[in-house]
Structures are given as structure tokens and as C-alpha cells.
Length: 314
Length: 108
Image 1: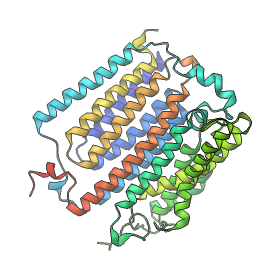
Image 2: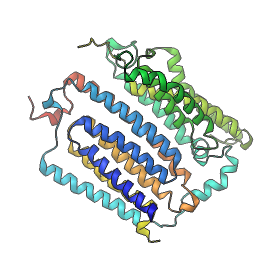
Image 3: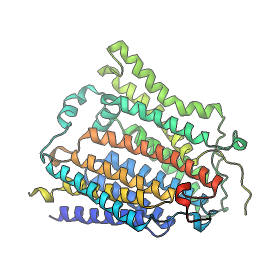
Image 4: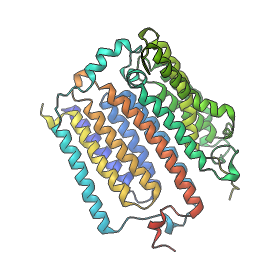
């Protein structure tokens, strides 16, 4: 009973914070509520015993998405208040509210109608995990049973980065990625930028290593490493790389290429992505390490955005 | 235990509510950044519905397949968000507006 009371309170808070993020008075408030929302959803994932998802949600859903939105907010400062947008007209608003309520209710009805004792794919995963090469079932699904999804996902990251870079101004091409950061010497950002990266580096590498048997893996570890890189770059500790740096581009595609090579090599054992059980552990570990590096660099570049001309301080 | 009080259903229904809230926010603002934010709320609502269905029998733990697909989804959502944010900031710097031209009507 106490357990389910906690769940009820947490869910009520999540809905309240989501409402504040969606309807908050100004943009900045909305973004801050969205970050809080992401952290609370991560707690919900812990309650559902999905620790890997909780890690990803906290690091990506709340962390990196929050940095992206706050970065964009900073660039909106020059826009006239009159051109910042507003609510749609009231009659339209009422129609939308009714439609949204209807959709939520429909999804709810479907959920209530589900078999409360459904097992999903748990028996199938348990029956095959011994051949997967790893002990963490989530890693087994990501890098073995449904490796296609993960390969395509790692390619989506590269394609998104190409899309972001195509938006660069012609005059900025060849510059360092992102906006020039101006940091107050020995301010909060710079102090954190010096203190946190060593800790983050250690945690990130641990997650990549631990992913084969415990919660963690290439994506969770890669995100933390991306955050370390972002923080160091934003604190001005090292200049962001240039877009046309060949080593940078190689590190972005190394993970997907190794993954694809292993997938194709699987045809020798009977088909795409067929990993022989005795080699699976080594192959998965190699993919995870290289993929984590590529993911970390690609995520960092996605959040930093296209190269921009150095702006003169106002 | 009665079905309505079981843990997974509470989270599933919360996810269903978030989908509606996010859709409402997506359609009710003309500011493009607020639309992106609301779109992310829709996404995490869908993830929560999906993940909750994988936890219907707590004794067996959480189903690994939805978990893996949700992690994939979270990363893809971030990629799409990053691309959208870049498009919006580029649009804003070229046009000086945070909304689409159609929604800019009352302004100069």
C-alpha cells in the first residue's frame, strides 16, 4: 500500500511538472520544468525496474535535451517579444484540448484492456540469453537479438549530425563547431568544468565496461562521456574541434562501420548479425567500446550545433 | 490485488496522460521551441506506456525488449531534437522570428 502510494504521488508530480513544462508562462520556465520532468521520469523508470532506461532518460532526456533547449533559448534573446509566438486562438485551443483528452483516454482504455498477466517477450529472452555472450538482458537485446535496430540507430546519429552541419552558414564552414563560448574566469561554470570531467570520465568508462553484465552499456556510457566533453568545451577548457577535421569525422563513423563489418561477417556463420556464441562476448565488447566513443563524440557535436562565426561581445 | 492499483497500470496511465498533454502543448503554441519541448513530452509518454506494459508481472522483472527499444527511441528522439533545434535557430537568425511565417500574422 505504501509502495503504491509512492507511485501515485510520483505520477501526480510527473503530470504536474509536465503540465508546467507545456503551459509555463515563459519559455525559460518551461525549459526548466522540462529538465525537472526528465529527472522525475527517470525515477519512474527506476520504479519499473528499468535501470538502463533510467540512466538513458536522466542523461539524454533531461541532461542533453535540456542543454540543447537552453542553448537555443540563449539564441532567442535577440528576437522581438512580439515575434516570440503566443497561444493559438481560444476556439482552436478548445478543439485541441478535446482531441488530446480523447487520445489519452483511448490509450488508457487499451491499457486497461490488456491481459494483466501478460509476459511479453520475457520467456523468449530468458531462453536465449545463454547464447548471447552477455549477462545483461538489455545489452543482449540491443547488440545481439535486435542488433539491426541498434545499427540503424547509430547511423541515425550520423545522419542527424550531417543534417545539423548542412545548416551552417557558408562563411562559417571550416570553423570550430558551435558558438564561441564566453566564460567568466574562475566562475561557477569553469570550476565545475575542472572538477567534474575526471569523475564523469571514470563513471562513463565504467558504464561501458559494466554493460555486459550489469546496467550500463555503450549508449549510457557514451552519453556521460559526451557530457564530459560538452562541459569541458563549454567551460572553455579546450577549443571545440573544426568541422573539417578528418580525425573527428573518422571517430564519428568508426562505431557504425565496425558494427556493420561485424554484421556482414555474420554471413559466414549463416546470416547478417549471426554471432557465434563462443565469440559473441568479445565481439559485443569490441563493438560497445568503439560505439561508445563514436556515440559520445556524435552526441557532443549534435548538442554543440553547426559552426558559427565568432560573435562580437555586446 | 485489484488491477487498478497495480504499479504498471499507474505508470501506463500516466504515460497516456502525458501523450495528451504533450499533444496539447505541441498544437497550442506557435513558438517553435515550445513545440519541440512538447513533442518530447509526447515521446516520453509513449515510452512510459510501452515500458509499463513490460512490467505487468513484477516477479519476473522488466521485459528487456521494450527497455532496449526505448533506449534506442530516447537516442533517436535526441537526434531529431538536435536537428529541429538547429533548423529553428537558423530560421530565427535569418527571419528574426521564433514562429513559422503563417503564425506570424498579427505582427508587423
